[in-house]
Image (cartoon, rainbow, N blue to C red):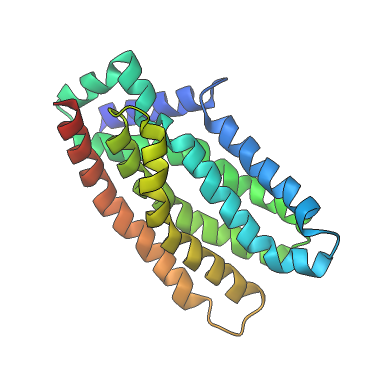
Length: 222
């Protein structure tokens, strides 16, 4: 447990330092949301309708942008070999690294959502609904993306492969995240059903992701 806590603290420190990648994701998320009103135009009602989808799409792309560093930096400096050879089960180490990545790169996106919601003409209820769905759904993006990051870490041009692998797996999260947000804002469909599916996707990815990522790392590093 101490080793896992140390691994989480280490990864958060690396991610938050200059060039660590977490800030890049937040800036990308900010850029997507700020540019979108210029593309959609001055129609505030339309901007408000599209707001949840814009925020979710920005969060998805920002997550993909930072996921390639989940294992790549450790592979480059050799610490990934130490992690795989340690007495701590690799599945738990992968889960700890994904949790650290979500805390450093995913949680700031949720914190920034209320501010960015103002740029999309969302009221407090709508912004809160989107932030709640992002809180429930972004762990699924991280733990699913971890599988692609593990597959791509030992391959040439693996970043492109990771995007190809992860995007299809992320589509259900995007669909139910936007559906739950829209249901909470405009109705009349129920918020509970898509939100429950979104939570289920995160739980399933939390269970499957570490085992799939550990198997990919063992196979790729052999």
